[in-house]
Amino acid sequence: MNTPVPTYTQTRSFATVALIELWERFGYYGMQALIVYFMVQRLGFEDTRANLVWSAFSALVYVSPAIGGWIGDKVLGTKRCMMLGALILSIGYGLLAIPSDNTWQIFSALGVIVVGNGLFKPNTANLVRKIYEGDDSKIDSAFTMYYMSVNVGSTVSMLATPWVKDYVNAQYGNGLGWHMAFAVCSVGLVVGLFTVLSMRQTLHAVGSRPDELPLDLRKLAMVLGGGLVAIVCAAFILQYQSVARAFVYVAGFVVLGIFAHLIRSSEASEKAGLMAALILMLQTVFFFIFYQQMSTSLSLFALRNVNGDFAVLGTHLWTWAPAQFQALNPIWIMMLSPVLAWAYAKAGSQGKDLSIAGKFALGFSIVAIGFFIYGVAGQFAVDGKTSSWVMIAGYGFYSLGELLVGGLGLAMMARYVPARMGGFMMGAYFVAVGISQYLGGVVANFASVPKDVVDPVLTLPIYTNLFTKLGFGAVVCTVIALAALPMMRRLTATHQAHN
Image (cartoon, rainbow, N blue to C red; front, side):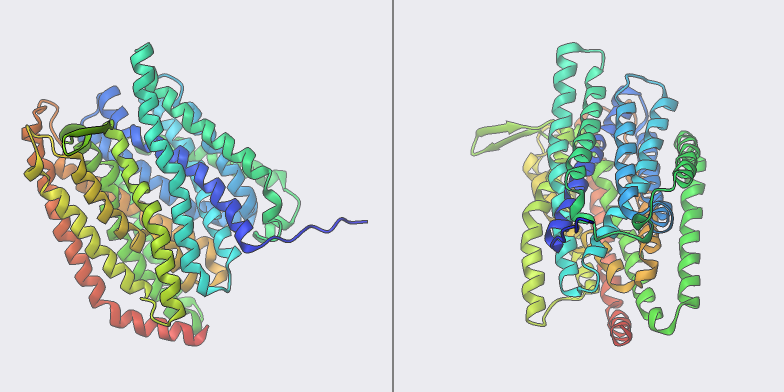
């Protein structure tokens, strides 16, 4: 006699996926908070090399889901890929925890993280889409809350790993703190895996076709073998920047070519949605150029030109390490996400919800304000060190803009892309984001500081000039997004009429 498998609500299924995503973000952002500093301070890289290595890695992290999404849809299964990716990620962070100054070892560990992310990222997002499939009224709110929940993990890790690094270095020296901090990232993934394994029944009714079949060990071996090849390729790309540049640009042309082919060969009822998705995806590319500044130019700005002391009316509150300022982004995301989700739901119930294209335009204008705040940081500086409160204000606008653009990118794909293309198109979205991450590193290098320049008074204008230009760049993006609104209204109306 077969025991019936209990059914679970959308909310409980969503909570399971959000929980493992929370732990994955714990590992990734704990590593991100330190890796550029590690390359500059520990490995002795120039700013330009550190920015481009990190940005090339970021591009690979976002490009890899194009393959991982397909593997989840057609080969191993969405749920299996999510769990396998989390396991490989824990191994990657564990490899970073092994003390070494050898760049090939460091880059190989980063390659393992690329492979793990490629399997994990598109399949978790695709599970959320499958949980709410056919329920457009909940998709925007669900993805906004999903975006908020994962920031819990990144907040904790971005505050914790810099502290672990500084504490262990102070106690034991020899730079051991860097590697202990990376070990914390690995442990987080292991905890996440065990937690979600205990809740796996909530996802019993969700997944792709291969999830319903017994595991094919031959296919698993092929995927793992391909992963080993990808690790070697990733390490090679990170070591040689000319190869990284060529890889990213070729990936961009391939994505555009595939989009053009899909639009041309798709059914008439699907063309409008795909064209709308392409327009919004191009806008997303521009947004993530701004986003990449958080871990490059803004991160190095915090290292050299921000006073880490927080004080009110002369009373000292606390002091942050430079790397901890990146935690302001997820903190603001968590504060603002419930407000936006409520606003979306209320406006939707009254038939007054702003379109995704309109939210994108609003988001760019808010990002512009954030960068203009960074641009005037010199007005609040003493001896080249600006106030920590400038960072709080700038990150506030920056993060709200991120929610309006980056936070709805996945919802945009879920709304406009046919379900049969779901996994692949999620991957294509991440490829586009990866390209913009690399371009963001190229932009950040306009504020690279030569090694012999250490005076904060001299480095401050280098950064503020870049931030002001980025503010004007966001204004231009706002104008372009507004100009595209009439076309987006027509495409959306056509898409809805056919679906």
